[in-house]
Amino acid sequence: MRILIVDDEELARDRLKRILEEQNEHEIVGEAENGQGALEKIEALHPDVVLLDIRMPGIDGLEVARHLVDMDEPPAVIFTTAYDDYAIEAFKVNAVDYLLKPVRQEQLQAALHKALKPHKVQWKALNHKEDGTPKTRTHISSRTRRGIILVPIPEIYYFRAEHKYVTVRHSDGEVIIEDTLKELEQEFGERFLRIHRNCLVARDHLQALEKNAAGQTFIKSRNLEERLDVSRRHLAAVREIMSG
Image (cartoon, rainbow, N blue to C red):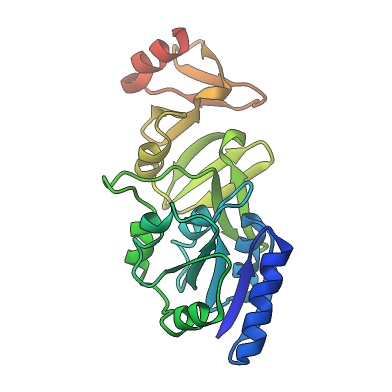
């Protein structure tokens, strides 16, 4: 199997490499030291299995796994961690194993033997809490011709539905994602406000309500020249938020 090793500690990565080299059954296709690097390597290298540390700065291992949902063939993930308080969450996907550090050769070998590519439905289960509500991501991921782009949630100005896709306008430009506005509203409802049937805006960037000569109301966001249309249906709720 083709294996990617992800851990923010070099010593931990080296230990896993030594174990795998001793087994002489698998190919190590690469390694990454953080969540963003992991997603980029997964996109570029197409590993069969990812040995994935959970507790990492920035994007942690559980969020990396949740970003794999939209892949046609996501790799199998074996979580590795020094902490045992993630076990229940990690085991929500049957094909994902969970190893405590220091990882031992026989444990890793057994985990690799049962590592199967999870069904996408199983991956979607990892993206939800036990009560069925979505887990909140720290980044939005978009797959482009240049590879995967990660956009931090605080840098997003708005989500706008256009045809089959949603445009994410952020401080560095725009990306396209396949999430629906309904899914985004459920996940980020506390941070984004619906102003139109096709638009959610970031509450932290709201600046003012403006009205044109025809009486149409628009939202102005900080650091964004574009004005966004507020529908009559949502105007009262928007005014209440803006005056609060």
